[in-house]
Image (cartoon, rainbow, N blue to C red; front, side, top):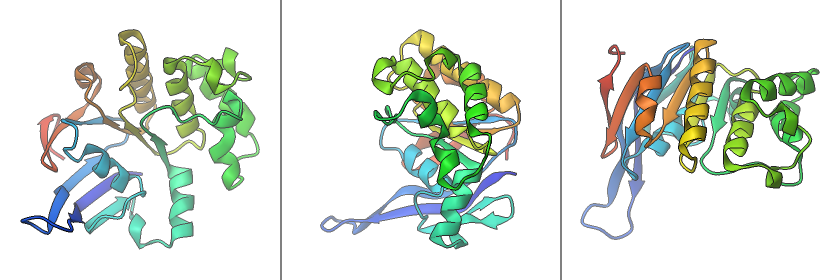
Length: 229
């Protein structure tokens, strides 16, 4: 299952300006390939996160389509889109997003219980916590975790429903060098297992882990590494 943007744009209107609108994302077509990491880099405000949110089904494009397999995701009703996101698209958002009232394993399991996706969610959660190296913290609370451990919790949670696509928005933005390398290696490993990974990042180190790299400038991504696609 491949996620593809076809000529998507995102236009915002201004109340008072010489121009009454601007494009956060200019017309863009790109495809996330199975088993690969696509990186989007660029300065703050260049449209990286806006594009990721459109691909994630969280922000409707002003024009164009987002296809997951053969499905135009924005043609779906809200409930159908929510179910599709939950089952097929994992998102690692910016910042620390663990719920303080839940343990680590409860945080990881949460997406799987929203629609009763799996009867074996606890077993799956422990497998993921083992893979990201924090299984020993399964019954701890987010406030007891370091920044790097919280980011690994977010990765495990995003993968609990075995999504075809994993979208990571600045997953190393507040981490030290050691944890940055660990998170990038985890994303590379999951891509090697067949997941389509989109990595939005400022991190220079990330390029060596990516198969395809785009540089975003004024809302337009230009491919600077990888096969055209």
